[in-house]
Amino acid sequence: MSGGDRPDITVIDEPSDRTSTLETFFIMKLTWLSHASWLIEFGSLRVLLDPFFTDNPAAQVQADDLEDVTHVLVSHGHFDHVADVGSIAKRCGASVIANFETALWVGKQGVDDTVGMNIGGTTTLTAGDDSLAAKMVPAIHSSGLPDGSYGGTAAGFVLTADQRRIYFACDTAFFGDMTFYAEGVDVAVLPIGDLFTMGVDDCVAAIKLIQPKIVLPTHYNTWPPIAQDADAWAKRVIAETGSEARVLKVGEAFEV
Ligand SMILES: [Zn+2]
Image (cartoon, rainbow, N blue to C red):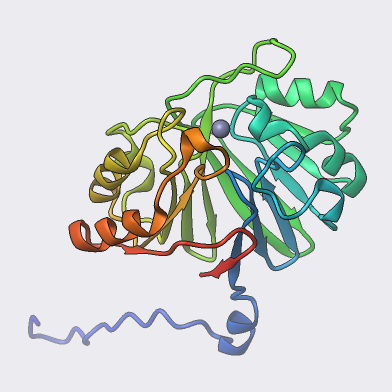
């Protein structure tokens, strides 16, 4: 510390009203609904990612079981990600967020509230006084819609709320630029199924690169071609990376 008349300066990053700050620090709850379908709950927000229940042999709920959905995030146009978007959004009055072309397609299914965006952009999801930011980030994958029309570009999402960051890589190969969008996130949700997305080896490589605090597997065990031993994957994550692995059963939730 230099001498003279200058006082020591101590920066105290303390809210003036601690009680109200604690009251607004909601837990974020992630429930795996099988395949690549997740329910993200945060305050008044109930956000579905890639709802796929119809003709999904791993699903334990059906589209009609989901109530009070406020938003639906869609990573790309393939049937195993858009199958139940329209019916749920219409019944719940939810806003659908997708790439521009997929959002147009969802609008043609009769969904009134769609937000078309594109990679690199961020939109804010709001319900009541609660909000979270959803950034659409690159993924390496294709995106044709079920009727064969062009589904834009496949993407992942980084969700940010109350200084927590959750990376949903969604359907993708492993690629080095993941680190620019997701390095050090609190939670990374990464595919391990192989064949259509990265498999276990590349998933472990991705974890080493982006170094999430906690990692959850997705997009596996829906059908035999993407069967994986998630417990073996978790053992490798623990042995080979500095991240914590959590394997959820279908319907199980994780809180962060
Ligand atoms: Zn998929």
